[in-house]
Length: 287
Length: 236
Ligand SMILES: Nc1ncnc2c1ncn2[C@@H]1O[C@H](COP(=O)(O)OP(=O)(O)OP(=O)(O)O)[C@@H](O)[C@H]1O
Ligand SMILES: [Mg+2]
Image 1 (cartoon, protein in one colour):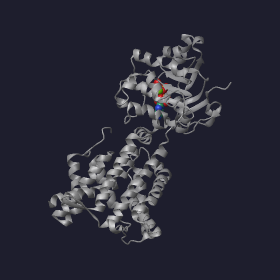
Image 2 (cartoon, chains in turn green, orange):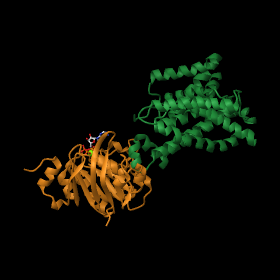
Image 3 (cartoon, protein in one colour):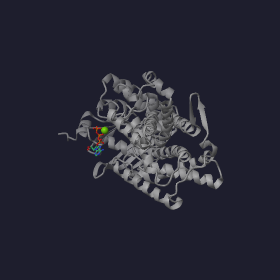
Image 4 (cartoon, chains in turn red, cyan):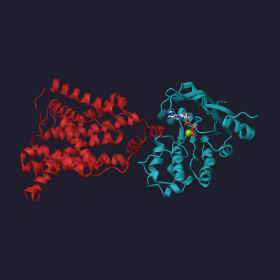
C-alpha cells in the first residue's frame, strides 16, 4: 500500500515538472529555440505573484490572474525585441542570449528581492488533503496535476484545432512559405513565447505554494523541464506530461528508498530513458 | 491605363550574386502573362522579388501604380499577391484541408472558399483529412494552387506548376486556369514548356540570365524569335 501511495505522489509531482516543461516544449516545437532562461522566468513569475499577493493582499490563486497578463506581455516583448533577432540557421546565438538573460534575471532578482527564501502564502490550501478511497493526497499536489493536464489539453487544442495553431505549425514547418500566406513569423513567435509565459506563470504559482524559492533556483527547474521534454520526445505535448511523471515517480520512489536519492533518482531515470529510447517516449513523426 | 502589376528595372539577387538585371514586365487587370526561360534564367528569383521574399527598391514593383517593392512578404500577401511556389511547398504538418485554410490567413474576401476550391479540384474533398504531403504530385499541385486561391488574390503567381508532372495531369491542372481568371485573378505563369505558355498567356516574356530578351503576344512572336530569345542564340 505504501508503494501505491509513493507512486501516486510521484505522478502528482510529475504534474509540476510537466508545468515547468510545457512552455519550453511549446517554444522549442514552434521555433526550435532552446530558452536557457526558462527556469529563471519561472522564478521571475513566482516573484511577480508574490508581489501582487503582498501589495494587494490577494490569495495567490487570485494574484495569478494579474501576473498572467504581465508575464504574457514580458514574453511577447522579449521575443519581439530580443529573441527574434537572434533566431536563424545557427543555433548558437539564441543559446548565448538566453544564457545571458538567465544570469541577468538572477542578478536582478537578487538585487530587488534579496537572496532570502520566499514562499507564496497559500493558507489552508497548502495543508488540506483529499481522501481518494484507499489513499490520501494533498489538495495542492492534486491541483497541480489537474492544472498540468488542463494546460496540456488546452495547448494541444490550441495547436491542433484552431486557426492560430495552424499558423504555429505552418511557421514551424516553413516560415518563408508561411509568410507568403500573410502570416508574420515574428508575430507568431512572439505570441508563442507569450503563451509559454502564461504556462510559466501557472507553473510558478504551484512551485511557490509548494516549496520555497529564491533567485538562484531557476537553472535546476530548467533541468527538470529539459528532462521532461526530452523523455517525452521533442515537440510532443502529452509526451512532456509523461516525461514529467517519469521524473516525479523516479524521485519519490528514490526518496522512499533513501531520502538522499530523490534528486539523483530523477536524473538516473532520465538517462535510462535516453539509453533505451534516445528520441524519447513519443517522438514526433516528422523531423 | 496603369497596369495591375508592373516591374520596372527590377534588380535582385542573393547576397553578392545579382540574378536579375533590370526586369520590366507588366500584367494587365484580367490578363495572363507567361515568363519562359531555361534553368537558372531567374524566373523564380523574379517571383521572389515580386512577393517580397527577396529585397528590392520600392519603385521596382508596383501594384495599381503604388510602389510595393521591398515590403514585407506578409504585407504583400495581404495586398492580394499570392504565389504557388516552385516545388509546391505544402506544409507537412498540415492536412490537405488545413493547407487550404491557411491560404485564407490574409483574410481577403472573394469568390474563393474551401467549397469553391473543392469544386475546382473535387479530388481534394476526398483527401481533405490526409496530410498534404502524402498526395501524388499532381494532387499536391492542386493543393498548392487551391491554397493560393484561398487568399482571393488579385494576382496569382504560378511558378512551374507543370514541373515533374505527367502530361495528362498537366492538362487537368491547366484546365482550371480559365475558371481562375473568370473568378477575377490576373495570372503570371512561369513555364519551361514554351507551347504550354503560348497556349494560355496573352503576353509572353522570354528570360535569359536575368534579363527579358523578348516580350509580345503569342500570335505576334515567331517560333524562331522565341527560340533565339529562349536559348540566347543569334539567328543566322
Ligand atoms: N538561394 C539561392 N542562393 C544563391 N543563388 C541562387 C539561389 N537561388 C537561385 N540562385 C541563382 O540565381 C539564378 C537564377 O535562379 P532562379 O532559381 O531564379 O532560376 P529559374 O529561372 O527559376 O530556374 P529553374 O527553371 O531551374 O527554376 C541562378 O543562377 C541560380 O543559381
Ligand atoms: Mg525556378
